[in-house]
Amino acid sequence: TMFYPANDMGLTMCKAIAKTGKLQAYQKGWDEVVAKNENYAWMVKMGEIAKKAVPPPGLTTAAIQQDRQQAWSQKFFAGEVSAREAMENCMKEIEAEIAKMKES
Picture (cartoon, rainbow, N blue to C red):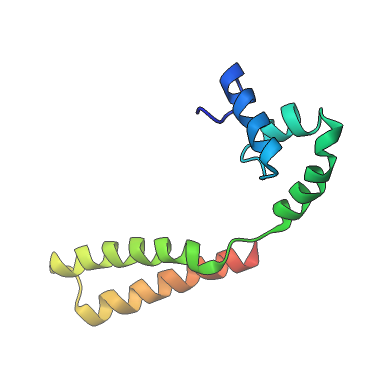
């Protein structure tokens, strides 16, 4: 919340970030700091590029894999499913979630 430009401290932090040439983290930082200062016009173009960027799948899929593995491991250890059934269902769910990411 310290960096969010909804208060004086946030605006000060966003201005300091802009002066370093780093990209703003919050849209309001762009609206309140970058867009209002012609010295930061170059950052607007950088922001447009950043909006188009897609995070590498590995960063997101690791969380999906961990979540699905944990869920199916719990079912296995509770005796609800066999190890093979747990892993097959786990892989199906992981693949389905990753497929959704690729579609968007």
